[in-house]
Image 1 (tube, chains in turn red, purple, brown, orange):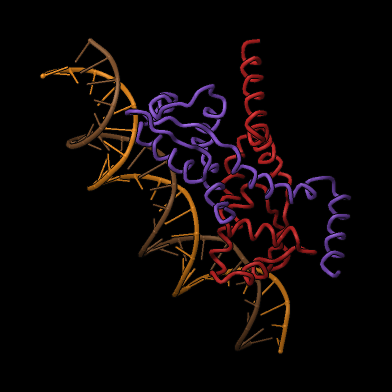
Image 2 (image 1 turned 135 degrees about the vertical axis):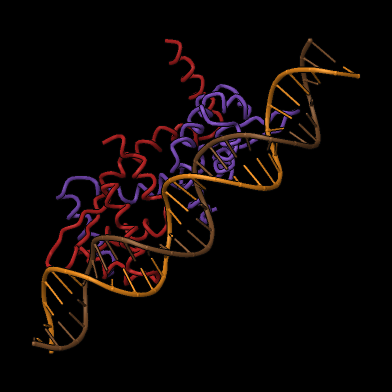
Amino acid sequence: MSRNINKIFKAIADPTRREIFHILVLASTALSISQISDHFSMSRQAVTKHIKYLEGAGLVEIKDVGRERFCHANAIPLKEINDWVAFYEKFWDDKLSRLVNHLQQKADQKS
Amino acid sequence: MSRNINKIFKAIADPTRREIFHILVLASTALSISQISDHFSMSRQAVTKHIKYLEGAGLVEIKDVGRERFCHANAIPLKEINDWVAFYEKFWDDKLSRLVNHLQQKADQKS
DNA sequence: AATTTACGCAACCTTTTAGTTGCTTTTAAA
DNA sequence: TTTAAAAGCAACTAAAAGGTTGCGTAAATT
């Protein structure tokens, strides 16, 4: 579960994949591979590859129906990204609170 | 500023770079390139390259002092990641709230 | 039954990434 | 003033990323 975080980071690092994910999140129904690739100027195969990254990260789930493969978004893995970023939230406030947090941290390390 | 988001995503997509960033955030003083690369088994040059990515994303800032280059972390660009993820937060709750949010969104689109 | 659609698979290409090593330059220490 | 340390630069390599095209196959359509 937690060793997957690299895959999640990698999946969302690409702008095309973020766009695919966004389309799927906003879609009212699951979308087939072709329906998704209609949104892009690149080939269907290229889109398929991107979807595989998203699937590998758990951000997209696929259900086969006949000759079609319907994709839907699963945002849950993004929690891990959220958690990662949340830790640094303390450090993007103003300089003073950065100092305070910094000193706090040093104190924590010694205890 | 906002077109930089790709660089930020790419910078944090790599585990080594996340580690470098983390070391710098926790460090009480700015660290030289050598001091940073001491934490890793790879060569100094490899670490330098990673730092360049971080610098390009604004996550690391460097001050030259004599023959040394002192690096410190700047977490502010992570705000953009935070904002990106925050949008999807509504979708990783339970299924019911996902449905509610979904319907809400459809309503929003029509108005 | 013939054709179209939706898709996977595989081969291929180009660029980027992640790493290496060797060499030079600048700065600091002996 | 010789030597050692800190770092940049450049060339090189291997692997991964991002894309293409051609082809095969299964499922719908006509």
